[in-house]
Length: 161
Image (cartoon, rainbow, N blue to C red):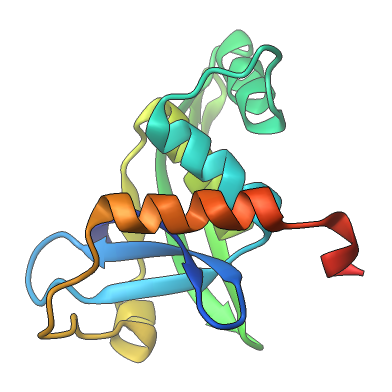
């Protein structure tokens, strides 16, 4: 397992497809882009920005449930890509012992963004799907956030039918 960090959520142009971007913390600092759905992109973005919803979102509810059951979320591991689909695991500590639950990476990352659980990626996954960072300077983070906000304001549920 290789430690990765959440770089952020961005919208891939011209398809207007949201993605989450993870970066290898040490070594080559490879990037791992994962395409995700708009609701999950919003959930991750809200957590990164520290936006508190008036009522708990699903990820907030799940974290509260974990805590109320006396468990802790120790780490998130993006494990593999199979048939163009990424897979992840939630690693929990409970009174009954350690538990590992399968999860979509977008949901797992949304949970980690809320509670600060560390993120990891499988070594083989990064070797096969990690991308070297471009030499050109990346967009300013505020530009990326503005672009995503524009996407959120213009998206229509009919776009996904």
